[in-house]
Length: 231
Image 1 (cartoon, rainbow, N blue to C red):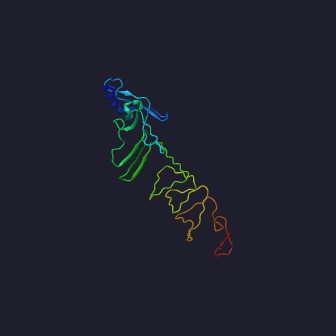
Image 2: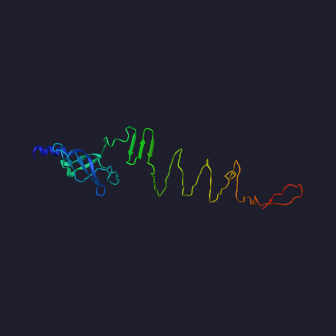
Image 3: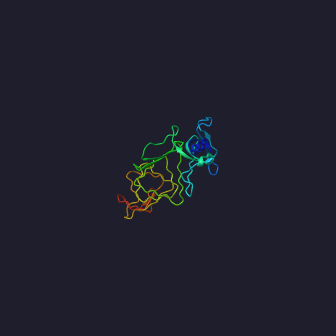
């Protein structure tokens, strides 16, 4: 093996390049890498065949986050042979700068503008999604949230469930129900309902078995006190 061939093998062992194309459907998924200028005889340029790219995990735990076209990568070629190469993704560039420059931040940015980040100095986790985005959580067993205070701001909130409120509830806006209401006094015999204000009903109201609008009284005579309502 002459000196030029040895030099070529050494140069090709570790190269920087850019993604030309990605085959998401191959097994394993593969990509092609462009290194240098293939038309420059002095530039040591080459375009690889389809090569596997390195994922964060690929065992019992697996992760899917494929490279994208023009992403800057490092090409590792055992024995200097590009045909045996594997591709390490994740080099920032002018066209793909780091999404944060904070030493306290773990940030992941997506091409649609979504950003998920955790600031370990401020103990703050945030997810910012673009307009029209949705969040779906499927947990057949249970979803448990433990916190001191929770605030939900939305145009509408729909709960398709039997809801149990174990402590007090204050409704600032209008309160409406469509399928009736039932209740009972507290453990200490407190009233079921107290209203500081008026109430309007479009139909009769029954209190302790007595109709408010149709109950009668026993005649007591002129100027006599009204009797108790007749049930």
